[in-house]
Image 1 (cartoon, rainbow, N blue to C red):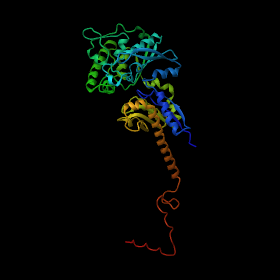
Image 2: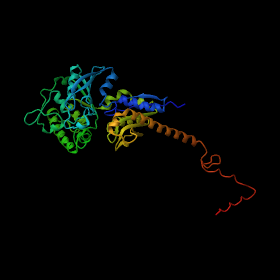
Image 3: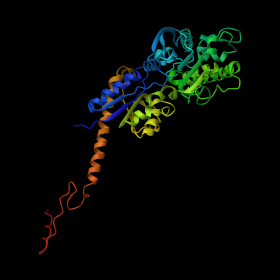
Image 4: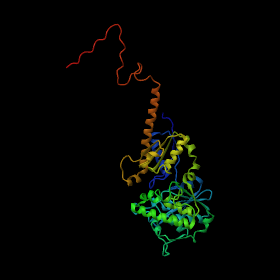
Amino acid sequence: MNPSYRIAVAPSGFKESLSAREAAESIAEGVLRVLPTAELDLVPLVDGGEGTAEALAAATGGRLVPCTATGPLGDPVDSHFALLGDGSAVVEMAAVAGLALVDHDRRDPGATTTYGVGELLRAALDSGARRVLVGCGDSGTSDGGAGALQALGVRLLDGAGRELPRGGAALSRLAVVDPEGLDPRLADTELLVACNPYNVLCGERGVARVFGPQKGATPAQVEELSAALEHWAAALTAAFAPGTDLRAAPGTGASGGLGAGLAALGAHLLPRFEVLLDGLDLTERFAGADLVITGEGALDEQTVRGKIPGEVARRAREAGVPVLALAGTLGPGAGDAGLDAYESIAPGPVPLSHALEHAAGLLADAAERALRTVLVGTRLVSRGRARSARPPYGSSTSPRPGRAPSRPERTGRRARPASPPRS
């Protein structure tokens, strides 16, 4: 009978394919193929991106509120925000301005907008909420939050007094920030932003340079966006927050700079794991497990900079438990996140479209393969411990495999010499 293992399954979602809950269920399926008696603790984790509103609503006895808002390309999209059990609201920016809402052939971070985020904030205020948490992650935008501010009543004008079009590229032409029409209810609202503190708006590690390419920006567009966001930071600081650092303060680059835009309105930028994970008692739950399995779409140099597998690895180390990660892709720096082991879910080269469509099956299969490898290791350790209790190789009671036992020493007569070799 197999021993009963306790395994905590704590993945993030896999962008554009699996929610955190779906990822956890797929991993569990693969584990149970190998260890049908295992005790599983499914802990799907959100980082402010896709699935955050739904997860927090479920955890607090709240509900999702469906609504229609402006999508990242300017078209209406079906979206939602959450009303939590305590009466506060959650606006998930990915639900209205996420990368998954932008077709691959239309990705242009200079043109996409966070306007819909501002519309969701207004809808949350309309519902009576005066404490709103904005989840940042999985964005398809790089407009510094300009669109959200426009939806909340801020006018952005060019040198001729015309309204700027939406999108980050237009910010290079910004001449006037007019806050006169800003929604007055924000003055009485506690606005919190759950964000990755490693993401900053400007500079060499600014969002245009770090995340622009994965949102569709060419090298030339990266530089144009970087300059536009520098200009935006200066104008935003002068209009709303003199003396503050909206260029490089922690979290200002969250969701393509949405963090900076909301910080200018007085929002508090908070490390997302402090806001989203601390109520889950992760360290305690990990301490009761024999193994922790996490996962995300990609493991690379960004993993250690505020991604869920890196945070899971940190908390698993605190609990003294090994952690295994499964990922869609493995990039440079994947081994620097403190993980004990990691593996790609792809069994070989596969087209991206195939990987996205079949992510659930690929993840379950990868979990099965990884667990079989883990069990080989545990059995090898067990055999090594058992062998350490035996006499060593070469002793008279433990002949080395593949070698004939040594002859007992003869006494009383001489041994015959060996026959010469035959030709």
